[in-house]
Image (cartoon, rainbow, N blue to C red; front, side):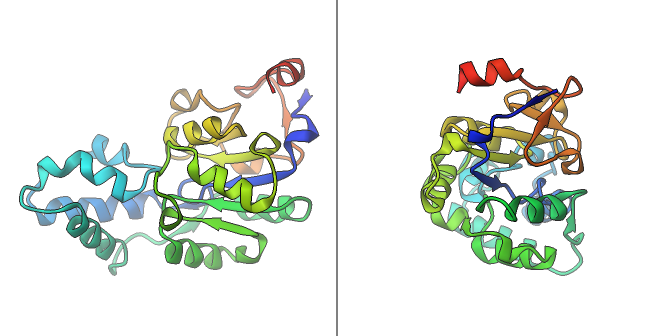
Length: 233
């Protein structure tokens, strides 16, 4: 068993949706309402591809499905469905709250989410871990969303930690790409995607309940040996 070197454990960065909270049923229902309201067939693979990305980045790619609408109009409408009654509730993912509290007891912690700030504040409050986060970077704070690394770099700057000294937790390919581009270690949790789609991460787990801190690597995971860590980082 190998240990990710402690030099990479000076801060922790967490995604929110699909990493800390099981929000995908809620998100899928909201996007489906948007599609349905405009008579657009619900395309499940297309909607699943939105995972981990800001609505403002996703919508320009599907505007051909909504003739006569603007991105701003669709974004406002989509947000109204996210806040509508009758959607599946947000639920904490296994091990998420416990890991955040354990990590926050030893290093500064930041949230880097593609969701809006008010939503993120509400979600963290619901989990009972808002006070654990020193920094919160939301979709409102960046000009380029994931897979661009801007959000993760902003979080590291705010924490006063170099990206290569931070470990980030993600669930989606776009988030993994953002973490790796920023230069941080990436741990992916297979909650919203198959493990094969998360191969860009340094470590893939099925649940955050599997994670110790500092992080240990063993043969069950998509990992690197300690020698590789020292040579690659």
